[in-house]
Length: 100
Image (tube, rainbow, N blue to C red; front, side):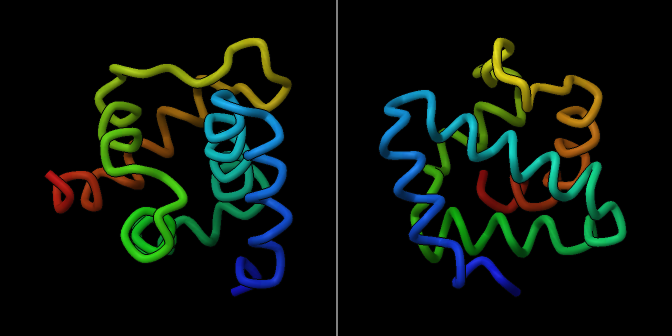
C-alpha cells in the first residue's frame, strides 16, 4: 500500500549504492515481509510483480537468478539473513515460475 509514498526515496538510495544497492533493496524487502510483517507474505508475489513487471525496479533475470541461488545477496550487509531469504524464495516461487 505505501510503496508509492516511499518509492522515490528507495530508488534514490539504490542508485547511490551502485550495483550493490539493488541487492540491499531486496534484502530490506525480505526483512519487511519475513520478519516485520509475516502476516503480509500472501502479498509477496503481487508486490514483486509490481516491482519487476510494472515498475522495472528489479530485472526478471535478477529475481530468477536470486530464486535459483545463481546470484547471492550481500553477506556483509546488516540486512543479510540466510533463513529469511530461504523463506522468501518459497513465497516468490509461483511468481518466478510465472516469469520463466
